[in-house]
Image 1 (tube, one colour):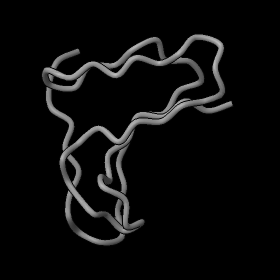
Image 2: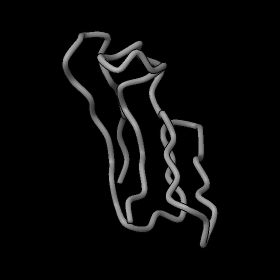
Image 3: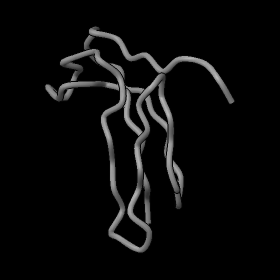
Length: 65
């Protein structure tokens, strides 16, 4: 799939991709590599923020258990 991943600088929202297992994800020219067999990982993937949580981005890619 191709496209863009953008968050917002507005308060009260958060966006992301969540899955049980992610090998790697590519957003623009940047590749986010997940470590096989590691504890669930998360990457903040868009140059927006801080979002409602005060983090550097409100768009994330996250593995869940």
